[in-house]
Length: 474
RNA sequence: GCCCCCAUGGACUAGCGGUUAGGUCACCACCCUUUCAAGGUGGUAGCACGAGUUCGACUCUCGUUGGGGGCACCA
Image (tube, rainbow, N blue to C red; front, side, top):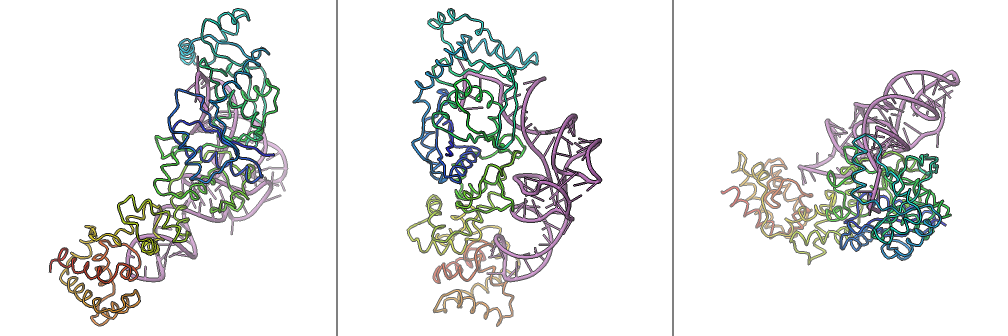
């Protein structure tokens, strides 16, 4: 039975790298008909951020990463960890350490200055059992595990056999002086108790895996299988960070990325199919995902490709759905959202241009506003350039022609406009461009005649007339 | 400083001893077109280096170089 978990620490927001880890765990579980569990690793009280846990679940839900079983919260399991710490203490596989943070800090500084590897000097290891017992009643202490002094080997599904030497690894603190366990202990205990079969996590954990292997051994447990995912990188190849990139999943949501596009993109960072397929339905992702096809090298997060992919998803999406999803963005921009069918028509005309849901308000606002804003460049280029008089005449004529169209449909408008061009020996562009700018305030936009139809006859004529007064001044 | 991992165009990657080194993003050109997009066609650009193994290495081994991660009473 495959059982995997995503185990974030609630220190603020879900990181895009965390999302990738969560996704791979999720896909692996679903592919193998296993369970995908959540565990909150909140053992560091100094880094607690209030509301972070709620935000985390909210964003997981937005991504559609549904989990099985009740999430495990580490801070509620202190007694459990303590029990295993005591077991290790009794077996003499761990010991109390009374060294203060200050002493440790100083020691570390000194070692680094001497270009030595920073490592605990084992002072408290020399304490006798009785002394340790006695001191424990007077002073705060931590518990350290004893690292064996020989080679530690383990297999990683992605990287194969990995070897470390125990003599190079510190006697790790497993229980802090505040009674909370450190990551290493809590992680091992919970993975065992939760019957986790595969630990799929980021590469930053690779070098602490030997500590975990030893803990499993000390506690007499069989370790799970490990798979260390390559890191997500900044454009400069360092570990993906807040400093250089947008890393909070909620930022992507707020910018108008679709969860399915984000997940699809992130899935591609470190995993691929043999035919290098790019776009996947979520069911397809589950069907095709295997750890064997995960890569080993770090991947730079390319915002440009994500943007393209988001556009692909938006273009493919039924207008009804796209409109629904755009609603919050339209509303936020202060545009009216009461006429859904009309919005749908506007969006339909602009669909090919939308890359982000947040693009929508700007692309459709001239349909909805009474007073449109004339883009200065557009106005200068098309309306006010030399020959403004001629443009003025054309617009006046067009307004006149349009006012006589009974059935104001794209087809009719186009026919009449082209007829006018022909009769007056004008190039169509001499008419189309000024009309577009007069009615929308800009040079770019959807298919002109469909746009005019949608704006409606009265508004079109009024805007053309306004334009003649305000922008040309004839 | 020590330990570990990694290495195909600018980016993501396919390749698992014999390929004109394939796909996607980006970029460029052309086509379509009333504009902007979208779409179509084509193009520029890559196996880090050096030894070995082999009839033959992008592919296997070793080394070099380069990049990254880790070395906390943080996860």
